[in-house]
Image (cartoon, rainbow, N blue to C red; front, side, top):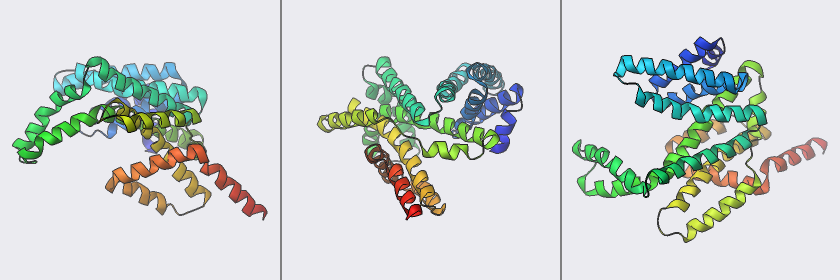
Length: 305
């Protein structure tokens, strides 16, 4: 990982090559899209919005040429990489200016809200639109005998109902994952240990906690899955990321073994819904209780006692 960051910082051609190749590889291997976007964010964080935009544009041209050679068409791939890079470029520029992961996460949530709103602008009923898009996919699963015909319709309805919120929440997670990776790379190369302290202090504004309470109340009275549910999913994504920061900070404050972090991330893979919910609740509670400040007070008392 350090080699990739160092390569991107050697010059424009290296950064363009890294971002473009990773973006093409992300088509069959989606997790690589995070590393591709992180290259653009790293250049932006280190050298500014203008240089980051230049790398973004040159990488887009390189991706288009590679897509023409490999697939015979460039436009779909170009659209994919721009949707992947542009938000992270903007967030990288914002983080460079405000130096606050919490404020930048708030901006990412606003971008997620735009993604959700765009689905409603594109179609009066995003659920119906997703229903049409997913129907051939579900049919292919039935044809391959991976699912039974009897449950296919119910699965289709469930997936279509949750997709608008899932897309918005996934957009925020991917954008922040790329940005955090880039910030970590920057610290590794130029400020060892700096990212750890910055990530441990990540906090969303208290006003967002009040907004979350209001949305939860609307969701409580809403009938079925709808806009309040999607807004809840989006906001809980922000609290999830704060919850991750909280766990890292508490682990460091207690000087506990890194095994606890390994166990948490392993549980995220094998018991995702439960662990995500617990982390989001912890992050939300932290906005009211400020566990990190309390832990710091306890540690100070122990040292003076």
